[in-house]
Image 1: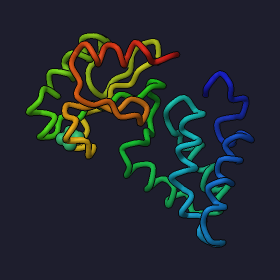
Image 2 (image 1 turned 180 degrees about the vertical axis):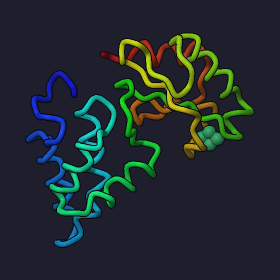
Image 3 (image 1 turned 30 degrees about the vertical axis):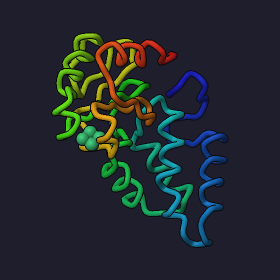
Length: 169
Ligand code: FES
């Protein structure tokens, strides 16, 4: 759990419940399932970057959905993590356009800089270097990476370093 979260693992904080209510209100009554992605985003963010089974079950309970409908969304989309990992998620695209323009070298550069391999988190829990991503639809800015869901394009090892240095704890 994050330092700011006083809820137990299987409960949702008041802030996360507010966020979920915000998403539920965007859809017609009875369509709570449409709020699952927004709800999981809020829960993952507050939980320091990943979703535990207890949290996913709590989201399902709050939305009055069968837990499987929340678990399947969390396990399908690459923006959700269902195992403990670092707080800041780094995804470097190595699909064709990015590969041709140095994406794989950027992965090697970041692995060396952080002292971890793709799929691992730094020991201080700050960064999680995700296993290589499929195309993130920013091919014209190749090579690119996403850090906490923000796109950075036309990267070089130097600009990658600058992006990572700017990430606050
Ligand atoms: S190939 Fe990297 S964003 Fe498309």
